[in-house]
Every structure is written in structure tokens, then in C-alpha cells.
Length: 94
Length: 475
Image (tube, rainbow over all chains, first blue to last red; front, top):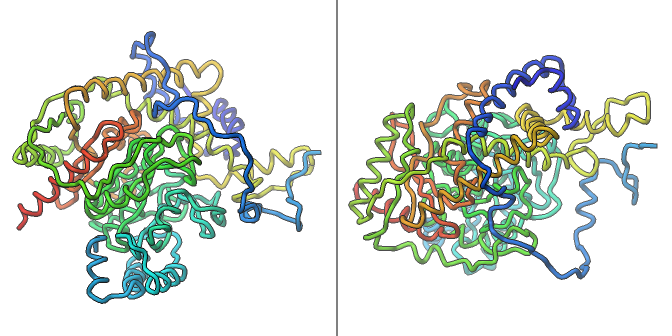
């Protein structure tokens, strides 16, 4: 399976990453090798196997649906890249 | 200086303040060369030391200087995941493990360098420079917890926390000649850990002795309601149960962990260690884990899939680096913010995110991601079957000793193969420890002991008895 530059551009857009032409060429060849390497998984007969989604064996972990005040809201807001007083600045989409 | 030696020094009259100052001086002297620390917290450390000197906490960790890998959130302190994406990011809260360490009086000296977002096996993927191995400054310390391992090996702190997703505690511990423990998945809360691969990630101690690893594990292990993968099982008291008569214990030696092409001196050190364990009374048993060769492909398919999802949150909107290239049309501004902000990722995160998108994409998910999850189940079942007949497994941690800086950095696939003996353990969610077992051409070699789920106690006991017997041998 060859990962060609066109596929890299598609994957880059899916990942919301911008790449230079040099990066596209370089990653295409590196990722082709990696995908070729993981291709060996096809050797394994897995028709009887179930997919592992989670390894701890825990199921249906729940908690009471009761709200509690969060004490550190200001600390979370301080991480915001741009603020204007009580409002948070984001890129406009309209 | 170990935890025990630290408390001895206090009993002999040293104040915590004086001891913290000693470590601070060492960091100031050696860190420019090693680059183990990205951020130091000397002021906070001194303030805490003075408070504890006034009012001590009755715990063996009181005053003990630690280093914390920079993927663990420490409130009010710069936390970067060694990435330009979080260069100016200050953590908004403490990880669960940090709350526990603080409550027991431990003192943080700073945040350690690592591979960017914990992706790597040499610490060469850090956006803030490489880390040097204290044993040989031209060599890598291993990764991704390279900074933590180097800091402990160079005695810049008493102990450190690292994280292990595919070997990132054990491999650098092996390369740097220190102890590194990966707990069972779910044993230690991941709340406040910047996620790489949520079904593999663990937090664990990197220390000079097995006892110190047990003490740290005692403190950080246990149920946390903030982490829904945190197991509710009671935590045994590890540090006070290290002594054990090993006679009759069965240790499995998996044949697939002794491969063609591995360093022969490393292999010999492991065989020597097995002989040493036999002298302590264990019964070695040859075992086989046939699907071991598929562990790396399973690991990288699942890891890149989960990482691509986990790193999607770094979009420049709520935290982290936000940048734009100011497009003309307002319609493009959001997309442009994403593309521009996310250009602050380094090459390895970019590669893995794209690989993740690929293995999850329609038309390929079945072939790669679902197939990997099924082979994962088979690898886990294989370990379970072998553990019906043995108590622990003993194997090398790595196929060779620390390689030279720059040697592998341009070959991502070759770097992935470093995880060959460590990543199967993360795939199966098991606990494992790496302890020093001698040298090969003057470089440290690590012995890996793998245990049954939630059986950290047995692997610590075997490790402790081995470590103590090595001391006797040297004397």
C-alpha cells in the first residue's frame, strides 16, 4: 500500500495540519514504510476474536448525576488564549 | 540519595530547606548539559520546605525532592508536554497523582523534558532540545521519559514520575541504570495526565531503588472517581511487604524475547540475572508467547488512532498556542486558526495523527484498527494462559543498550522497534518493572519483570530480592 502525496494531503486536512511540499514528500515515504510494516497484521486469523476496546475489564462505570460547584473556573479561564474581560475571544465563523 | 537516605539526613540534623538547596545547586550545575528539566520550581520548593520544616508531615515522603514529567498537570506551573503547542501553557489544576504527592509532603523541583506528547524512545522528539544520558553524554537517555530517568540517574532529585504507554518508563530506566515501574492499567489514576493513548497510558515512578518505587506506588496508586478507568481494588502496602522467600516461585522466560540481532552482552546479562534468581530459589520455566511479533504493529495502529483523537483537542481555541495567518475571508478564519495553531506540533505528532486518521478512515478501519484490536485480544489471552503456570515473567527490557544521539532519529520505523519488549505489556495492561542488572560495554542493562494484573507486589518482591542479592555480590 503506497501512501502517495495526494493521500498525505487528504490525511493532513483530516488532521487539520498544514504541510509544506517537502513535508508531504517526506511523510509520504516514511508512512508508506510504516503502513507496509503494520500490514503483517493481516497474517493473523482473527475471525473468532473479539475487539478489545478497553483492557481493565471494567464495565458500566457510573456515578450519581448530581451537580457540584467547580471551584477552579477562573483557573480554567486563565488558560484561554484571548479574553476581553468576562468574554472569551474566538475566531469568528459568521 | 534515596528516600531512606533523605530521611536519615533529616534525622542527623539537616533541614528540608538545606537538602532542597543541595538538589537545587546540583540541578543548576548539571542541567545545562543534561537538559533533563524544562521548568524548575525552586521558589515554590523552598517555600514548601520552610513550611514543612516548621510543621512536618509524618510520612516517609515528607520533604523529598521529586521531578515530574512534563505531561502531568501541576497547577500554576508551566506544563508543555515538550511541545511548542503548549509552550506558554500553565496547568489549571493538579493531576490526581500530584495531589497525593503534595498531601504526603513531597516537594517538586521541576518538570522534566520528554519526547513531544510522550511520543518517542530517545527524548530526541522534544521541541525543547534533547536530553543526554548521564552515563555517556553522547548517548540518548531513552524515551519518552528521558528527562525523568536522566534526572534520577544524575541525582538531581531523589525520584521522579514518568509515564509509560509503550515502554516510556521502563526503557529510559534501563538505558540510565535506574528503576522504572509501570503499574497495571487502572492502578494509578490518569486524571490530569495529558493523554496520548488512553487505553495504554500509565503513570509510574522512576527511582534509584526498588524500595523507593514501592513507596511512590503506595502513594499514587488507588481508586480515583475522576478517572473512570481507575480500578476500585484495594492497594496493598507495597513498601512494607518487600521481603519474600522466593523459593518455589515460578518465573517464565518467554522465548520470543530473545531474538536474533539483539545485543549478545545484553542477552548474557539477562541470563546471568536468571541464574542469580535461581540461586534465590526460583524455578525458571521456558514459556512461549507466539503473537509477540505482532505487538509493535498492534501497538502503533491503536496508538496512532487514539492519539489522533486525543490531540484533536489542541485546536488553539481554549488553551495552548493560538495563531492565525490572517486569511482574507472570515469564512476561512476558523480553519485557518486550526491549521496555523496546529503547525506548532513537531514531526512525530504529525506523523502519528495522520497515521491515526488513516487507520480509522472509512475503507481502512476494518483492515487496520479493528484487526489490531482483535490481535490485541489474542496477545492479552496469551499472557493470561502463560500466567496460569508461572508467577512472573522475566525478560530483557530492551534489545540493546543506549544508542548514540542522532543515530536513529531519521528513521521513525527503526525507532518504533525499540519498544519490542515493552509494548506487549501495555497491550495487555500488565504491570512491569525494569531494574539494573549490570552493564554491557559499560552501559546499563535493564532486567524486566512482568506480573499478573494488579500483582505489583510480586514483581516488586522479586525485584527487591534480586537488587539486595546484587548488593551482597558486589560487597
